[in-house]
Image 1 (cartoon, rainbow over the protein chains, first blue to last red):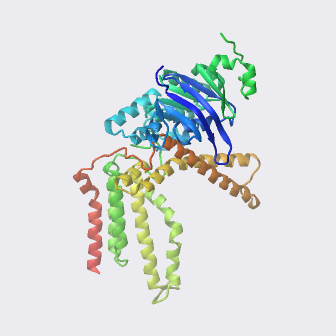
Image 2: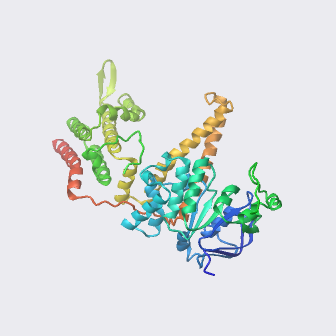
Image 3: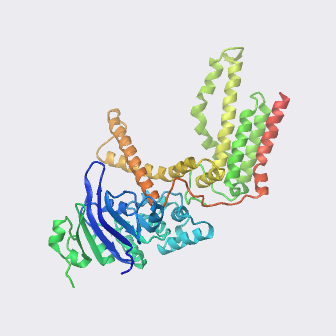
Length: 246
Length: 254
C-alpha cells in the first residue's frame, strides 16, 4: 500500500484545563480518498482537525501527512500539505479583494510573480469564481464566499483538503454547486459535517467520532443505515429520510 | 485595482492624478502638509497659494470643489477651540463690532483654522483619488512597518463585518421591544457593545488561526510590486516643489 495521505496513530489530546478531547485516535486515509468525519457536537471533530496542521499539538501519539510527521520542524511544510477550509468564510477571507486572498497562501509558501498569478487564477477557475477576482469578499453571496474560501486553500496545492461544515448556511443551489466543485477535485478530502445526506453524496467512507474516540469507520451508506449506531451517537437522518444498504 | 465597491471618501476616476502610483501620492500629500505647517501664520498670501495649488489638482482630477467641501465639514468640531482663542487670549486687543478680541488670539486661531483646513483638504484630495486598498499598497511600498499595514488591511476588511454584526444585534434588540432612545435602556446598548467586543475578539482569534493554517508567519507578502518611472515621480512631486517654493518665499519675505 502506498503512503497514506493522512495517518494518525494513538493520538490523545487534553486541553489545559485537563478535559480530554481526543482519546487514542487511530486512522488512515489513502491518497484520493474522500472521508466524512461525523459525530455530535463536542465529540472532538474540530480538535482533531486542528491537530492535523499542528495548530494544536498532541499530548501523545502521532500525526503524519503524506509520510511527514507533524512537529515543530515540519510545521511550514505540514501547513502547506493540509488545507483547512473553515466554517465561516468571513474568518478565512480577510484581504480586500478575492484575488489577493487567494494569493495569500501560496505567497506565504514562497510563490512569486507569474507562478503566483497562475496558481491563484487556476484555483479561482476551479471554483468558478474567476469573474469575481477583483471583488471585495464582502460583496459576494455566502455560497460564493464559501467557494472562494475553498479556492484560497486549493491555491496552496494541499495534499489533504479538510472542510469544516462545508454545507452550513448554504441555500440548496449553493450547496449543490459546492458539491459539484468538490466532486471534480481529485484530492484526499476529510469533511467534518452534520449534514448526513451531504456526507453520503460526497464521501464513500465515513468515520464517527464520539467523546474523543473513533466509534465507527466504514462505508457511509452502511453506517448511515444503522439506526442504532446513529442513535447511540446523537446522529440522525433528516425527517423523511431512510436508507437501505444496496 | 479597485476594491470593487464605493467608499464615501473615494471618487473613482481615470484622471492622471488617479492613475499616479499610490506611494507617490502619499509622499506628496505628506510633504505638502509639512510645507503648510512650516509656513509663518502671517503669510496670508502663501496660504491662498496653497489653496490655488489644491484647486489645480482638483481641476486635473475632475473633483467638484463642492464634493470636497461637504466632506471637509468633518473638521468643524475641531475648530471650536480656535474660535474661542481670540476671546480667551491676553495681550493687545482689538475692538470688532463691540467685541474685544485679542490680536494674538486671532492670529493663533487663524493659524489653527487655516493649517487644519489645508491639511484636511489635502488628505481628502488624496483619499478622493486613491482607493483605500491602493492607499495601503502605497504605505506598504513606502516601507511603513508591516504591523501597521497589516492592522490597516484587516481593519479595512473587518470594519464592514463588525458593522453588519452590530446592525443585526440592534435589529434583534429592537425586535424584542427595545427602544434605544430611552435613557434607562442604555444598559442594553452598553452590554451589546461589550458582547460585540467579545465577538470581534473571538473572530480575531479565528481569523488568525485561518491565517496560520495558510502559512502566515507574521509578515504580509507584498503581492503587487509596480516600478514607478522617474517621470511619474517628477510629475507626482510637482505640487511639493510648488509648496516648497511658497514656504521658502514666505520665510524670505518675513
